[in-house]
Amino acid sequence: MTALFALATSLLWGLADFGGGLLTRRIPALTVVVASQAIAVIVLGAVVIATGGWTEWGPQLWFAVGAGLVGPVAMLSFYKALALGPMGVVSPLGSVGVAVPVGVGLVLGERPGLLQYGGIAVAVVGIVLAGGPQFRGAPVQRQALFLTLLAAFGFGAVMALIAEASTTLTGLFLALFIQRVSNVLAGGTALYIAHRRGMEVLPRGEGMRMLWSAFPALAFVGLADVAANGTYSIAAQNGPVTVAAVLASLYPVITALAARGVLKERLRAVQAAGAGLALVGTVMLASG
Image (cartoon, rainbow, N blue to C red; front, side, top):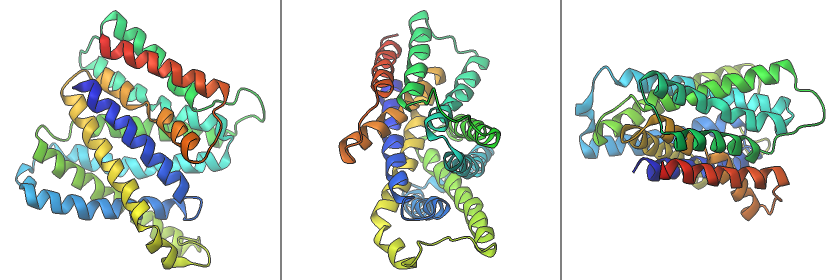
């Protein structure tokens, strides 16, 4: 069950990242984050009411608040790092955040078998290579490196925090709702500050009309991200966090494959090799 839900997480995150990447070509990144999460808040609010999830209030929800506050910071740091580039270095480095939940699992006493340790190593190398790392070219700016590592730590922290935010299914709905409310409050505040500073927060020339036309895509990105957090939480609660975190972090492979299938982007040799290694690591983890 852990492997199944963790792989579902990687699929959902990979598709959400792909959709979000397409949207940010037309709409400012911060607006994409806030709008997509706002849609998720509405849907999750209805789910919490329908399932009676509000009865699961408890101190564990502070983990959800933490995840909700860390998430936007990580995402915006990552977008800023991508803008500073080079993307061929920034993108794969962003996936090293898997070290956070894996480290938490080890500290809590999890001890994977020898085959699983090997699977973790192989899968992590595959994940990094699937991002298409750039081995030659212009050096990375110090600010870009700092922002990338900050984003990676943030992504990993969100995985660790959301896994601790609930113990039941209805509690998970409430935790995800609280996380998304925190996301919107943090992102909305940043969006307001950006607007006050004169930065563009709506698509140039088309404004709200473009935003409304992108509503289905924004809804998909927001809900896929929510579903990924949910499936990851279930995976982490039903098996070793060390395994769940690595399998869930295969999403760069999904994003690369989606770009290949939809945008006809060619996979570089290093990306194809990375995807293959990630698959081998997945099999090792699942069989261990």
